[in-house]
Length: 105
Image (tube, rainbow, N blue to C red; front, side):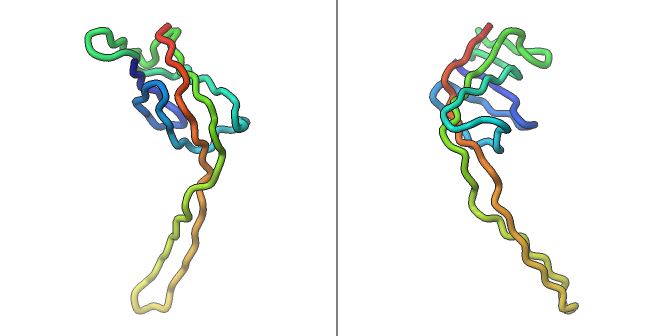
């Protein structure tokens, strides 16, 4: 069974046992379960149910495998012939999650 969920302003089409990299989920420790109720579509083919905007009663359970940081992103700014150069960077905080179950409701 497939489902399209919305999490943190982004949409993902997932099936069971898929692994996702999401922005850090607040308050979610490693090994804990997170339930997403913002399900836009559940099912596939002729049995697909599409919500307006969300499917009532549907939910997706995610298990947090790891909280970590992504690779470093370097931001470099330069104005040509002006002697202006700035270099900054950051590492995004991520949560690695696995889709445990999809309930159609």
